[in-house]
Length: 319
Length: 265
Image (cartoon, rainbow over all chains, first blue to last red; front, top):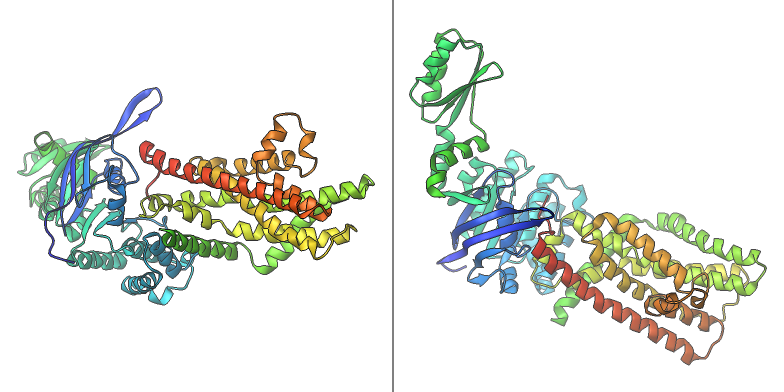
């Protein structure tokens, strides 16, 4: 592939709503603007129902927008659908999207035919891709006998069969074991090096940090922020949670006064302390231990909690 | 374009055969499925025998044997719905090639299955019930049965496009449609047995003209009559195939509009 230039994906004012009987339409996407450069690995992060998959469906031409504009390599997804489809590869997470009764090789040849590849090219690409995703030795076994991780690798091979310039990966590492997920990330890096543009949706911030050039955070159908993965890493290291039981009220007051403590609330008898500054969690634990509190646990906040922090901090500005 | 579609059709047919191999072994096909089919056809032939009429026995045996081709071909409704269940539908819609040739080939195992079952039922049970099978003329029933399989398959493809939107009714649709064909298309009673508009409906449904052609063939009717019936069956098949193409196109486009094509899990 040549030197990447320009935008692979341009999304402007994208809206998608669903009509409902005797109810207001449900808005899945509400004025999204997004640009993905050629050769970029772009992550879409957001909780369930945020609109990530809706955006992927529109990019993949299986869903029409109700407003706005989407272009893939300069082709409009609504009016120039055929051209977009030739440039696109789609990979789902989970086990669906494959023919279980066919072998891995038959699956790839089948999709090769749908991508209008000559038979010889289909044979060659199928073999090469099976080799690439580590399934060459299982190529002629039925897919229904594969583990989830193997199916996921085959999914990726299937997504690549048409030699796409844009690869849409929707939660691709769901159900993969850690080794398979690591190998998958390595493969994404190789695809990026080939100049392919990749749009990846994920719940996993660490994964986003590992593979993405930029990450867009989507919540409630709106784009909250587009950041580089370093910022994501900072979010992960900045926000921490300390949960302690049997904390006297005077100690709780002291905890709230510790620099970097964002919030400390009582929940079912426990004190839940949220921090938003590096080192704050350590200071809170030290204070609690000195006060004689014995039952303390610490951890990273959930992705949803980080969203809440980010949306709370920046949402009103970025939106 | 034609070459692309032929390649898609061939790939789909390969996967259809893989499905058939996964569903049946030669033993289960012969001793479970085919035995059940033979028992069903024999049951109706026995009714004719109990009525004490060789003519009615032949009518029921031939009608129900050929009907098997239609019955099995209508399994296309259920197997097309597998695309929705397997999660492959959005990938097919998003592929650069029209998915219609793929859907045409994807369930073609039922064409083979239906033609074989119906032919075996006709050629095995007719001598057992003492019915005439004039050879080699009777062998022409084989392509006629294959034609009935094809026309019913085309009809089933139209239903499949509907079933893909409402997967939960797939068995209901194929059950009701096979019952309709059995009742109005001349399987148990002549099409004229029913009041209007059923005889007129039978004219545009698959099976009617093909079954008529098989009956004409076995009763020694002139070749022109048999060919005429076959030609009408072919016309019906072509008509339903065209409707199926439009129905699948509508399925994809309406699915894009209303968001009914799911993505992944």
